[in-house]
Length: 379
Image 1 (tube, rainbow, N blue to C red):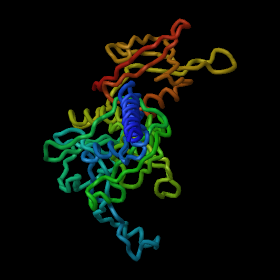
Image 2: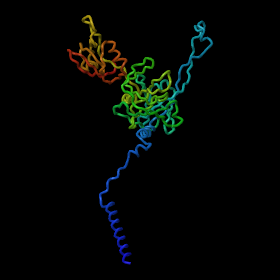
Image 3: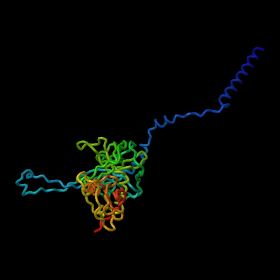
Image 4: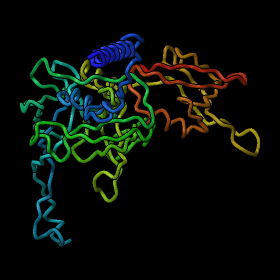
C-alpha cells in the first residue's frame, strides 16, 4: 500500500514538473517574431502592375471605325489602247472605303485623341466605347504635319486617360492599347500587347509623300498592328506616355517588334492647340536673312551661316541676334552651311507659332546661346 502511495505521489510530482516546464517554455520567455514569406504571396498572385494598368486605362480607350471616300479609276476597254486614250480620258468615281483605328479619351467632356491618318478624308466616324456604346464623332481639328487629330463625341462624364509627365526609361515596361484589325467592336475592349521601351528620340524627318514629320519618337517592341494607330502607349503606372503611330515591317506585313509612338508631351501640346483654335498655325516667320560664310582662303569652308539682315521688331531682333552673327547650331544640332540651316528651320522641325527655337551663335569669337520665339507671319 505504501509502495502504491509512493508511486502515485511520484507520478503527480513528475506531472507537475512537466507542466511547469511546458508553461515556462511556452510563456516564460519572450516569443521570437514569426517570419512570413511574403515573396511567395506576391509571386503566386496573378495580379501585377500590368494587369492593374490595363484595368485602369481600358475604359478610356475607344475603337474608331471610319468610312473614307477615295477616287477609283473606272476600267474601260480603251485603257490599254494609246490611240483611244487621247479621245477617252480616264474617268474616276468615288468609292467608300471602310477602315479602323484607335483613340483614347483625353477629357471627361468627350475629347478624343488619335492620329490624323486614321481620320483623314473621312466622311463618317463612329466611336465605340468599352460600354458597347456608339457615337458619331465630330472632327475638332487635325494637324497633318504632326499626324495628330482631335475628335469629340456628344457625351459627358467619360473615363479618361491619365497622362504621364515623367521621363521615359529605356527598358521599362509599356502596354500598347488599340483596335487592331477592327476587333474592338466584337469584344468591346481594347486589345493589348506588352513590351518595353526599346529606344527614345528616334527621328525620321519629313515625309513629302504623307506630309508627316516624325520627331523624337518612342520605339517599343510591344506589337503594334494595323488598327492600333491612335491608341495609347501606357507605362506600368497606368499613365499614357505616347500615341501608337507607325511600325517598321517587311513587305508591308504586320508587326515584327519595331513600333513607334509620338511622345505624349508633344501630343498634348498639339491637341490643346487644336481644341482651342481648331488648327495649328505654322505660318510663322523669323525676321532675318542668312547667307553662307565667304571663303576667305583656299581650303575648308568655315562652319555656320552669316546673319546679313535683321528685320525690326521681329523674332530674330527680339531674340538678340545681330548683323554679323554666325549661327553655328539650331537646337544643339551643328549647322555647316545655308542649306543645312534651311533644312533645320523649315523641314526637319515641325515648329508652330509660339515655339522656342534655341540658337547658338558665334559673336566676337565667343559662343552665345539665344532663344527665338516664333511669331505669326505678318502680311
